[in-house]
Structures are given as structure tokens and as C-alpha cells.
Image 1 (cartoon, rainbow, N blue to C red):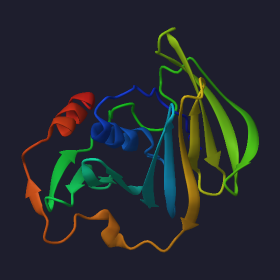
Image 2: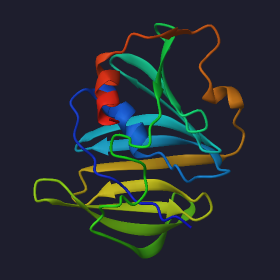
Image 3: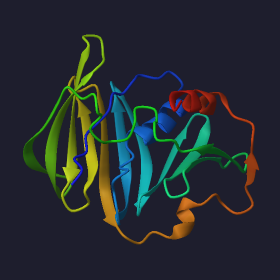
Length: 207
């Protein structure tokens, strides 16, 4: 079984781009027949940012609302594409899903300095293995992060940085009950080829 872990999280100023990047940091590329929805809570310092996340057989959808409006991002590993949907404009942008992503997938990076399972805990009703991973990066040259992987779901449901200033957590998890249309661009939306500033940055991260 592949052992998941976490990847470095870089602070971003553009909030919408930050949310898109966040999705790429939490993709469980190894998640097989997993289907659930959850409320996602992201804490960055004293800021708390709620969102919604959906998983179905490796496909993923995330929704969030900020001062710029509502944004939906769909990740389709089976089609090797990412769709960024802007409901206000009734448009969506398609980008290639490459092997290398910003922050990479939630799995132990090949350059991880160390990784180990340090215990088992119950997180939001799920028995989860707790992993500690040491990575290169940060101000001191070393970063430590912790991830909790639900045994039943076999996906991470919580991540905390060593300094406790950044965390991601799935709450109110509901298994099953998802329709396939959640993971497709809405009907009637126009595909655009005009990249926005945050998608340009995102594509550069994937090079």
C-alpha cells in the first residue's frame, strides 16, 4: 500500500490562486473507489476559510466563495485535465493535469528527509493513522508536517504544519450519494481559452 504524506505549503498572496493551489496539495492520487463529501476548513494563522470538497473514484471537486465570488475546481485524473469554473461568468478554463503539480500530490515526496507512522487517533469520527514527514524547505531548510489518514477511506482528512499556523481538515464527512455530473463542467457554460492571472501562475508551478 502506498503511504500518503504531505508536501510543502508555500504562503500565497492571491487568495483565489491560493485556493486553487490548495486543491492540488490535497489530491489523493492513490484513492481508489472512495466516494464522499465534506466541509473543508482551512486555517492560515488567524484566518479561517471554509469550503466544500467532493471525492468520487479518484475524481475531485472543490467549491469556495471569497470576495471575488464563487469558484469551482474539478480535477479529473482519468481525463488528465483540471477544470476551473467561474459561475458568475458562466465560463470554465481547461488545463492539463500533469505529473508534477504545485506542491505535488499528497504522497511522500521522493526527496523527503524522513517519514514515519507515529500513532493512531480518531479524527472527526474516523480512526486514522498519524504520519510525520520531514521535508526540505522553509526558513530553516527543514519543514515538518503531520497528516491523519482515515483507515476506512484511505485518504487524508487532516493536515497540520509543525508550527501549527496552517491546517486543513475535513469535517462532517458523508460517504456515498454523489452524482457523476458534479465532476463535469455545467451544461451551457462556455469553455474559455483566456487564462487568468492565477491560472497562469498555476500552470508555471506545474512545469
